[in-house]
Length: 412
Image (spheres, rainbow, N blue to C red):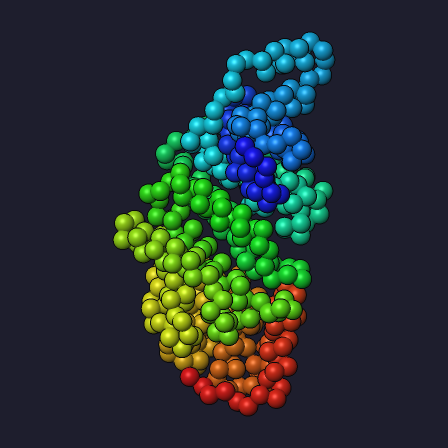
């Protein structure tokens, strides 16, 4: 192969990472040592390939180097080293099978692991990100990320879980965990829970890449398709979500000419086909809602009755506090602020929503729509104090400041 640019090299390594790890783990079985060895092989490639050129078969090169690194990690004496090096001389590395990457995802999302460990291990083992890259992406100290990954690998080792596809009865539950982890990664990139940036593009990009990979392996699964469509339709708005200074731009005020129309077209085509051919699931309904928003060329053209109907279906199929909060916003757009505020008061009795800044922000928005400017201003300021996201703090404070001199809005 010819020389690659730095982004091209990074893409190639991340594409190869899960295939290489799957092949090495399948050959040797010890996930924790193999994962460390593959990381060292990726580092070696990142250092050598820009100088020596990319080998004709990058995946086999990485498998061979990882196998040798594994020996170096395991050897404690000369005899062991010689035995292990002899193994490396066996002809040809094991090729990665098509289901290796899916098995790897299922292993990283094993139910014995905590969600934060699943996220870290998936980004490391399947995404090919280094511990430092994960640390920067998640805004967590590198030592903490390293500890999470180490504990996760130890738990997998201690559990004795084989590197094989789980039986069909277990596979569905494990796949749900995979989808949940990819969704967590995407959401953290789309709206960072803390810090100075609203978006972390490296996380949304990685989540979409992994969802595409999963879609290739499970083309008939409706929820896999729904998750990918949801990511595409949501990420399509990213170019219009922030101002040049990094400030947040709400959906109703975004310049929709900046939206990524190719991503929107792909997402709409994907969710349309999936809804017609697969049993309906939560990710498909969320993607359908995103599609209705993206199809509106102007905010006033948004089909809010359809969105409200979809949220009603979603709340029955997969009830949750954030689903209810979004449904209440749709209620306001269809039935008016009074009904929405009453439903918001009832929803806040859920412990998961009590005191949450999003509830306060929604109440501020509804009060502003209803024309109660003083109360809305107070709620915007309270919501700003409750969020850890600096862009959201600035947006909420700016709404409060703007209302200080704004005329009353007309109630719905």
